[in-house]
Image 1 (spheres, helix red, strand yellow):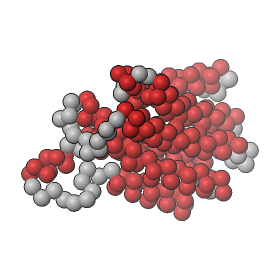
Image 2: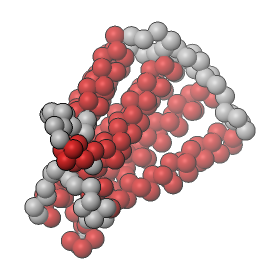
Image 3: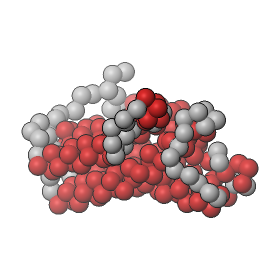
Length: 231
């Protein structure tokens, strides 16, 4: 059954959205494969291009959070104090998260290609690896948490926004879905510290389960909506 189309309350771009877009664009620029200088030789160009897969993967994750905020803003159009504080929190987290994200992606591609795609960041001990994974996963958890908080705020404003019951349900379901996704960040942190050294290196790859879990969460929410007669 096709899900209902909800109204767009944020048709006009606000100063807050403009600031958020600029911050996300700056974060994307910080991920550039060669941000310090233009390669001056064929060899330097080939080395720089080795960072392209990690750059693309990092950009994809940044895009997910940018699109989530853009979609929320377009749908609800809120620009009150709570929205501003949550948006500033999202921007701050993205700017902090961008380097652990890039380092983790470079390390992941280096691992999968057995060093063919090199990583500029060198991890010298298991403790350093665990701290790095913790920073990356904590950032992921907090970013998802902020998106969930935005949906929670919109749900609390459901009367002011004149939401029908179906939209209020969908808004709550979106927020809960983001909270479930956020829990994967905490799961990775727990695994990387609790697993023995031989298995700890695989803890970050737990995130790949989201490829399967994401659609499952959507199906569960849709079935819950059907039981209530919304969809």
